[in-house]
Image (tube, rainbow over the protein chains, first blue to last red):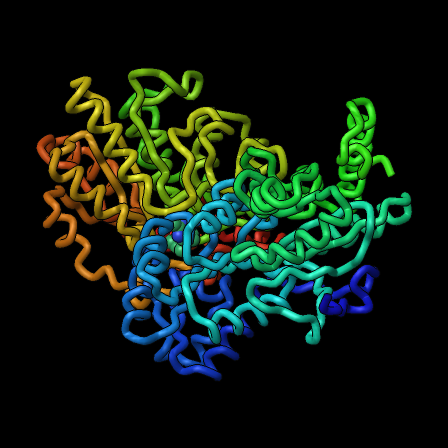
Amino acid sequence: MTAFPLDPRALTNDVSSEPIRAGFGRGLLAAGELDERVVALCADLTDSTQMHLFKDRFPRRFVQVGVAEQNLVTVASGMARAGKIPFTSSYAAFSPGRNWEQFKTTAALNDQPVTIVGSHAGINVGPDGATHQMLEDIALMRVIPNTRVIAPADSIEAEKATRALASDPGPSYIRLARDATPVFTTADSPFEIGKAYVLRSGTDISIITTGTMTYQGLLAAEILADRGLSAEVVHVPTIKPLDEETILNSIRKTRYAATIEEAQIAGGLGSAVAELASLRCPIPIDRFGMKDRFGESGTPAKLLEVFRLTGPQLADDIEQCVRERTAAASLAAPTEVADALAH
Amino acid sequence: MITRESVVHSDEDLKRIAGTIRRDIISMLAAAKSGHSAGPLGMAELLAVLYFHSMLHDPQNPDWDKRDVFYLSNGHTAPVLYAAMARAGYFPVDELQTLRQFGSRLQGHPERLALPGLESTSGPLGSGLSQAAGYAYVLQEIDQVNQRWVYTIMGDGEINEGNVWEAAMFAGKYALGNLIAFIDRNNIQIDGSTEDVMPLRDLRGKWESFDWHVLEIDGNNVRSIIDAIGLAKAVTAKPTMIIANTVPGKGVPFMEYNHRWHGMPPTSEQADIALLALEGATAP
Ligand SMILES: Cc1ncc(C[n+]2csc(CCOP(=O)(O)OP(=O)(O)O)c2C)c(N)n1
Ligand SMILES: [Mg+2]
């Protein structure tokens, strides 16, 4: 297993914070320096999606398409066919929210290296409300064949992921967030498309996370440790293709998983893990995230609390789920699962 | 009940109401600490005329089956709609101060299920004209109801969206004479001037070529708006597009014409200055 260095301040009050999208902006600029085929397209949101860095440095390789997300990805597909490596940005609610079919047909099925950069995903969009809180994107994009789906956990990882996508081009979706969130990985932390990483080892339960929720999962694991539950935290920045071996190694050991994502639990990371587990290691799984409801206006902090997506709340809820499952399992006829949970 | 072309509201009244709406916009945005300033301020006269003069509607009975219908397509301009609705009596004026807060009926972008009186949920741009056309089609072609009109307002940046032009063809094909649409022609969108981001150039020609009746007016002049609606109703064989030239940030000197105020709220100090300017502008 690769060691995964965390910032020494990661779990302290001194942890710094920055929006994940800022890392994308830097990564795109760096990718543009390395490869002149990289081009950037935006739909009237250049600053907030952080494409302005690329635009200022490479004005000829930046394309403003106006408020027109369907045109955004289809123009990009044409540019890809002409030899370019296009990154297209808007808010996730509109791209891929509005141009899913265009992406599926002209990028994925057509195998053109178009990347959709979905900024402002999740409920941390805050006061803009439900119309702008993209929660269905992981599910939408994960079901398209020949498409990679990546949700970096912080701005440092977003920078690496962007560079990785540019140097290994293919139809892709990368999910970014608006609000400043903790920067807890380091320049030396590994990132490879298709790899999951064990950020903390444990023996009782596996906490499997992606995007902004990885940090909350780490906090939850810390709290659970004080309560006598040893949690392994598996960070899954690439939801597709899924790093099956890393996930299986963890759940074969712990025999229980809690998945956490700032997205609908239907069809998201939790579903991907459940699909894998049902075939190769059937264990109980509890999925945390948005439970089949829309978001609403409020500050990001307030909304995380309302939807119980903060580390302390997740620790409570995971603990309760584990206890309920243990009780239920010991009531039922002894099974492998009950044994595992009751140890 | 507010009746269509009610005698109660003179042009002077409507100007005063637009001023009140502007002050509401500033105070609610300052309280919310997020949201959009420029577009809503420029649209105050449009909403004042619709809600206090031209539309037949009843704030006590929002689903009244004789009402005229209004779709706010550029949902980010919610503050101007909320202010007009509160002043018209849909909900208490005090509630404006809850804009964008957790639990408020005044969501950051309008949500039909949150607030009685909204015909739809908007924010993602480009969907209002199609919905308005769908409603108008039912009235004109299926239910054959006369004397009900369907209104919508779109932003000028918003009409970059392909969905708008799909609706343009549809409404032109079915000659939806009961459909009256406005473009808030304020020449700004997020990344700058509309003509830099995605030039609209000859808007009149574009809509005329889609078989629309097109009018172009000063959208900050209540009399021009009222007269244009009158002309729109007189043309029954075509949908009408009213290109309403407005000033983004209207009434607040440091916001006017500046696209940077598209999506920023005033600070409380800026709000004080803005309110002073607005008081001056609407003083008798
Ligand atoms: C489908 C969609 N894409 C992008 C956005 C983000 N957005 C909100 S307002 C806006 C600019 C719209 O310009 P305009 O309609 O002229 O509004 P104004 O700036 O004049 O208020 C954009 C791109 C959105 N709300 N919906
Ligand atoms: Mg505009």
